[in-house]
Length: 257
Image (cartoon, rainbow, N blue to C red; front, side):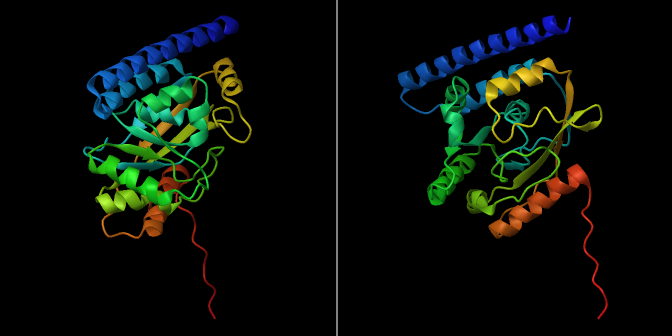
């Protein structure tokens, strides 16, 4: 029975990916005919597609908090590539992703057609990227970034880097902190994280062979960015996510002189 379930999950995923290819092809053809960028259409279709992709993944998703209205820069902890469809199904939104994802077979092409912005690590293009983020947010669109810069095993929140927040500050757009946690049998899920030298096919096989896990998505209180210094803003967002996932961090006590 478990083997039958595994093959059913793979078949469902394949069907969803084929649907994504068809949608991306339609958008590409429409842009060629109209000779302009249909980002609004891209985001709406991407949300619809990511909802189907999330449904094909072996997760029970629980969402707490209110979805923001108007443009926000979403910032959250990063555990796995599955963060993207799970968050992207919530509302029309774009993502900032590492450049390597663009080279992934099929998934990279779909991400590109969905309007994903790509960043190269250490490429020195921070100013250009900040301008791209600024234009995206100023146009009234939602955008997700993962300011840790990498994925983790879900047992910690790494430092949020402030350089990616400049576009939000310049556009006067608030941050939307989001905390995502994968649980299996009530504990931190060791299977969901996509870390180190993981490759996508192997990770998919591990996920689909396992029982369903629970994913908790917490939408936290927005943080105003106007007039803020980017590193201080990053620390504030990191602290909010850290507290939501693991509680308050005890402050060191000072000994009397």
